Amino acid sequence: MGKTVRIKAGDTIVTAELNDTMTAQAIWDALPIKGEANRWGDEIYFSIPVGLEEEKPQKLVAMGDLGYWPPGAALCLFFGPTPASTGSEIRPASPVNVFGRINGDATVLKVVPSGTRVVIEKETEG
Image 1: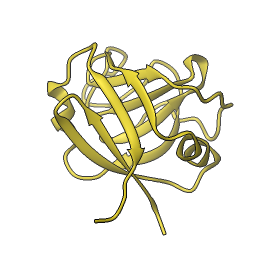
Image 2: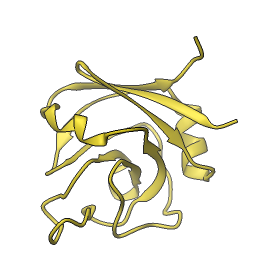
Image 3: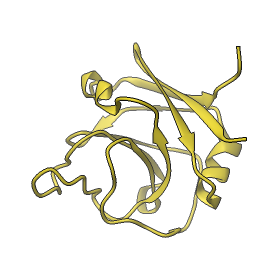
């Protein structure tokens, strides 16, 4: 069975599926996680209480990817180009461990400003 999380950023709520990596498991085990959104282009990131090494780090990510940024112990939500991107690519500040993907339209996160409270928790049935 997959691991589904609910991400609440202010009034915006999305769900995401975690992949089968050590990064995803470590973050799953740390849930719920709360933070304050920082915006960097079409990325939301914030530090989390999980310290991990690189695990198959990616220089480019896809729309809706969830990433863990080892240098800053930060969780990243990608929903479009960042200041480091060229054209329509989605490029993190430096490589991230991709550990999941947002279900549906990740661009709904474009309305979330810096400073918004973000809560990530395990999704429960029913």
